Image 1 (cartoon, protein in one colour):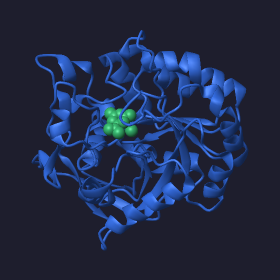
Image 2 (cartoon, rainbow, N blue to C red; image 1 turned 90 degrees about the horizontal axis):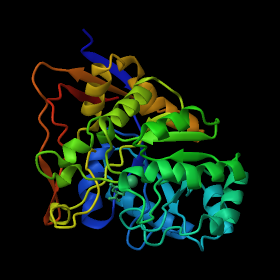
Image 3 (tube, protein in one colour; image 1 turned 180 degrees about the horizontal axis):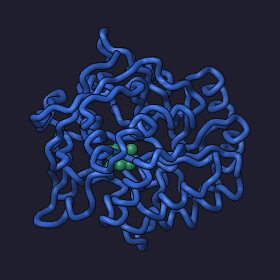
Image 4 (cartoon, helix red, strand yellow; image 1 turned 120 degrees about the vertical axis):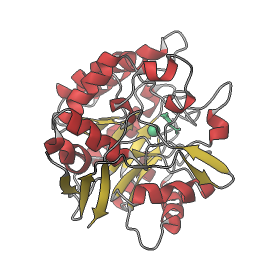
Length: 349
Ligand code: DOR
Ligand code: ZN
């Protein structure tokens, strides 16, 4: 039985760090394990221009504990008035690593996002020329489309036509949740990749709704049926090169989650590596964990894999994680995977 594993240090290719007291509270949970993170720009107001991206990067680095090394890879929030020249300059200055497309209204703080994709066609053309990746929240927002179908409809109506218009644009389908998306990325070109979250490998929609409503399992895109979770697991654990970890660790104060209309997001930063080792071992795929967490992402982004390593060990007692962390005057509940976890991060070398 394998009870020890050394992999290259993982990166998180989709991460919400927020700002202020929340940023200070959550950053160490990521920086302890992950070498780099693709930082989502959906603050209020959103992080749009390269100057705003640079200022946000500085605020993150200012909160990084002295004894930790972590590189935030910054993302600009795409709006219908984004200036192609500003993105090009931010990319050339190595401030911007990618650009995020939020369909307006799709999720938390997406009101400034894109309503009509054709309005950003000139920006996307410039990004394709530059090799600047587009990260996509792939859900339509039309009220008449069932929430469980919004990802599949987005692929048909928005993503596929976009890829036909601009095959040379690098695109990451963020946090995919369906077999439809898993199949779509598999047959896609070298310019198409997908991230998968930790929680979508572990929960399906029953976890949210059966036997009582569990706000801490509510995120967007919402978890789907079991057959979809199994398809995501199959893809993530297969070693397939164009899929990699993006935790979408998305902290919200419990006071905002536990409401008649609670917000979307699951906080997985503290226990993600324990969860993933559990999932990959369960599927007989520990040999592919490193590809998913540490190799495939940098390859797609054209970056070197980490020169550090991470040791994971499996104990005979469950690992204890806090139920919640403090953030200023608030608490943030940590993802409960619903099973005992025996793998833990021993050290980062
Ligand atoms: O569950 C989610 N939370 N999905 C998103 O797309 C955004 C995120 C957040 O910012 O809280
Ligand atoms: Zn996200």
